[in-house]
Image 1 (cartoon, rainbow, N blue to C red):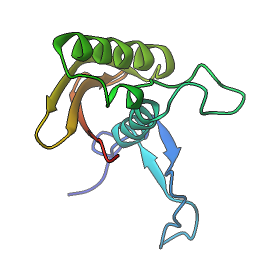
Image 2: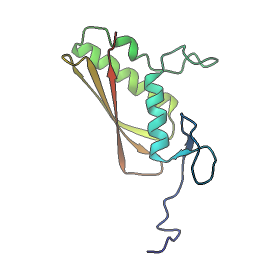
Image 3: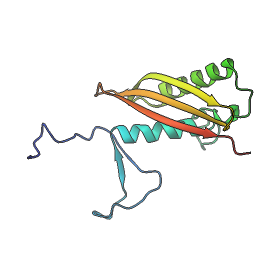
Image 4: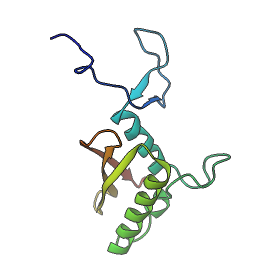
Length: 135
């Protein structure tokens, strides 16, 4: 099958990988494109606490600070709202479709499932983030 302008996947969004690994073919810094770039950005937003980034103290979600709270429905709603507001504010490349927060008390983990669609793509994409309490 030949690659034509209609069959080639277009690069709409692109970011550098956070590990800054080199591409083995071009020896340049590897990139993440389209959905993968937005997934990485959302994950970074969730795992960043407010005040953690220099010169951008408002960026972040503060979800990690809630890991040691009693896990009630109020905690779930607060986490969901914090995640929703953070993504809506700081990630303009996607339209957020849903945020689902569930906790497993026995294994001390919280599972966050985020469903979003890229602005120029109507296909929904799902991102799953696991937060573990390790202290």
